[in-house]
Length: 259
Image (cartoon, rainbow, N blue to C red; front, side):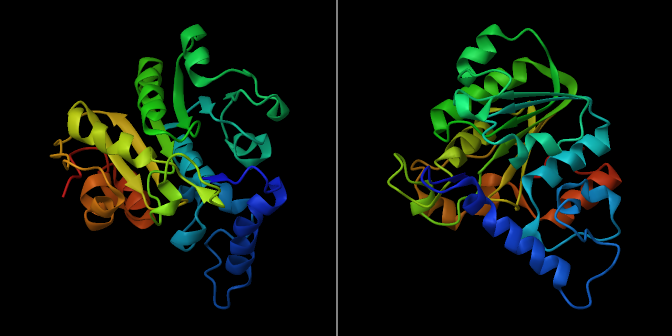
């Protein structure tokens, strides 16, 4: 999710801080669940129960994949503030890419420029750059080219909550996912060689692994109204509990998840 450029980093993170406080202070909370803001960024496999779906962060989804597959290398496209996500990823090697110099990314380049120069491969690649469908498609294609054999791609902001949030070009919305979801649907319709699910957390964390899936028939009109009517089928949307249970049982990516 991209905050409005005029919102300070602190204000942009405020909703997550407030949600963290709500989890910590919730009466009767299971002690085996994450209890602190730091723990809310940790692998969900480390706890006996998981926090409410609406407070699960993309960082926790990423670290859950790191824990499950013992990943060592991580690439983040669209780094923004390091402390927002990248610094929390529990990989030995971490690379951030962002053209905005104030973020002090390892590579201050656009994603296209970085992929054109890159010679390395990565276990886990997080795509959270320019939130326009055409760019997201290129980022996914380029990420697949440098993904390790058992690697995973995670695409952020696949599940906008309302029409305004996904409107392109940006029109001053406070929170903006762009039309990332359109790129996702196109891959769901054209790539039987991939396995794809969207975890319904943090505005939709789309997970891509190599494998097989039953492709969907794309709607003729990729409008938000169509997404709202067919969200689960188009995105292959699952909740956080299904994600964790599927990873624990090794069943999540064994077969097609299409409904």
